[in-house]
Length: 359
Length: 164
Image 1: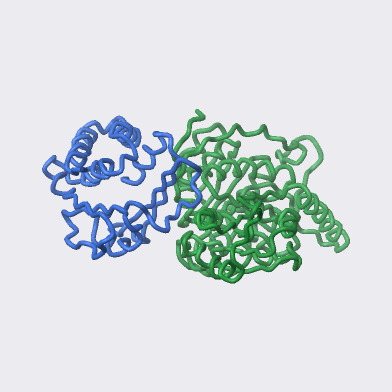
Image 2: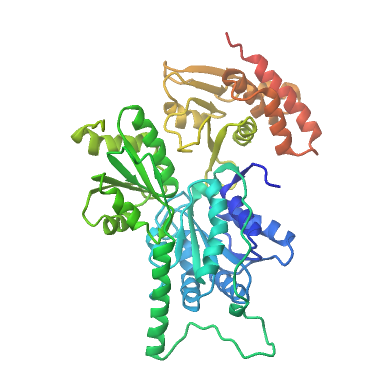
């Protein structure tokens, strides 16, 4: 059945995961990702070998996922911001042990318990590792329900390819929002049996561990991970360019903020102000080269986030001083409207510089 | 339900659509609102700065959202429970006694569908047929009786609104 369906983001992630072959899900309820837990509880059991566990805590869930993934299952857990904080120990552990799994974060207002409104306050946590130690997770940031479906499937493939946990970073608005979705055909899984722990057999014992007491041995392990992260940086950056060709101002935004930005861009175009959007789809690795290239033409970038300014650090690193950078953000679960953003860009740029026609 | 069914029928009619619900943190009895975007092209922002149409079913919604409506936009009010009227003069206002009509049809729970009838009459976003088919898909085939009342409620709302 590949018809267009009107589905909520949380359900889309669940359905895409099951179609991609996810057969183990463990999670603990928290708003605004409850519908994902709920969807998995109902539907993962309908497929052969599918296991759903509502665990006693978030920490238990992530460790169950690590165990299931180590034994070869495509595994996933999900939560919202405070719950993701609890999972960090497990994510660090999976990165150390090179275990592939998908961790979905449907962000809500923070810090602390915060509120249940959509924000982007967990950018640092997601892209800097979040837990302790020198490690990275691949971070994918969808903007539409369709992209949630596609990126969920891709996330499992990336996790397998690099034997690394992958984070799908969305927010409460995307979890609740409904849009028409068509599910693509998932790729066949490509993951070596040699990495899977299959229980006591006749062969040699297999050990997966993150505890490496010898410092030189641990150093070598860290270098090995570093080489892997470098390959990911080289090969896996993704971004979308929207109306950027004749733009005077480039907005840099991801997720829900990118949707608001597109709305603002369309409005401004009508008023003769050419604004474009650079949207990172992978937040780590950040598409630095692609953004820096734009600074050959665009000299003012406005970073727009639903937080106090986090991705702006990556934008600064990417642009290396080649363009001016401004910031607009609202934390705490407020989603700015396209008009609000358009007014900000007008005040900060066009009122001073005026529109230039590129004849 | 109103929003979901409208978004579903807009999708069926071939439009791009987004449906963005928003509930309070209350378990029961809180207010809820939703934003639906319908377009011929890909929808940039599912968040609306200035909606073209606003439907309010209770008083708190009128106070919260009346000033968001775009100048020249249309406001639909459930006049069975909303006594107040907006002070704005730059919008069209349609008062629909949804509760009263639904009650006379036998089930006050069909109030929202009465409103959808009026809304469709004014906006012509989708046809009554498309909307009814969406409603049927959403409610499932088991609720025949509810669908009968819904069909009547939709027609009543549609007939009520006289558009010149």
